[in-house]
Amino acid sequence: MPTLLLCFDAPLQSWGTMSRFVVRDTVTEPTKSGVVGLLAAALGVARDDTDGIARLAALRLGVRVDREGVVERDYHTVQNVPTTAGTGHRTVVTERYYLADALFLVGLEGEPGLLAELYQAVQRPRWPLFFGRKAFVPARPLVSTGAAGEPVTGRGLVDQPLVDALRDHLWLETREEARDRALKQVEKGTAPRLRLVIDARPGDLAGELRHDHPISFAHGARRFGPRTVRVDHLDLTRKLITGDVSCT
Image 1 (cartoon, helix red, strand yellow):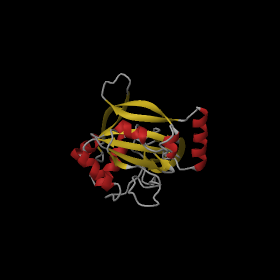
Image 2 (cartoon, one colour; image 1 turned 180 degrees about the vertical axis):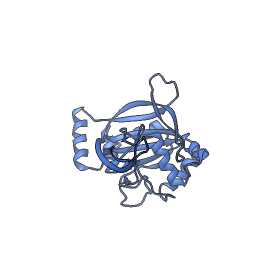
Image 3 (tube, one colour; image 1 turned 90 degrees about the vertical axis):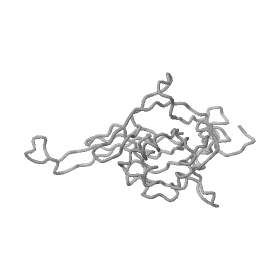
Image 4 (cartoon, helix red, strand yellow; image 1 turned 90 degrees about the horizontal axis):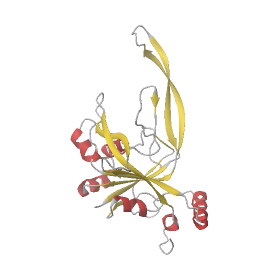
């Protein structure tokens, strides 16, 4: 079954799962709802198109964390918020959490025709693409087009199952100091480990429950369900860093 591989890279990202008005959280990797929302924007699927959302949410999701981000907190003041008694207004301080400096390889497995549509759509999206907040736009293309001189990014469509595709894809890190440091660690036998978060069958005894499976994004009627994921780790190798197939 084919897999679509995307690169999620930006100075700031935000992947909330329990956000309310006063506190807007983020987890440390892209959520199913966040990825489906981005894909829906690429295709032009409306918020209240539950069938279109369900089709995208049926894709199996896997995330490889190529660079762990740092959770940062900011705050905003909101004025003229009505009081609960309805007799006046007040100023409210809200806390916003962001994921800084993170880098992800995102894989999607499922319906081949839909993956082919998405491969084209993320290159020419119907609506702007962003990582959780409208200001958090991609720092590089999500997929490779094969053009000369383009930055390292997701390979796009590959003829591999999801897990194999995530394990075989070149490391997306482009910072020379980070790459040199990782190569030295590999030579010393202390290779860095990349975290993998992959959709699993419901009831998987080794799984973890996440409440981020989107059902509807309609204004005033957003709904999400549970999904099961498995968290694993992948040792970074010289081959993943340099692409040198003669080395392991």
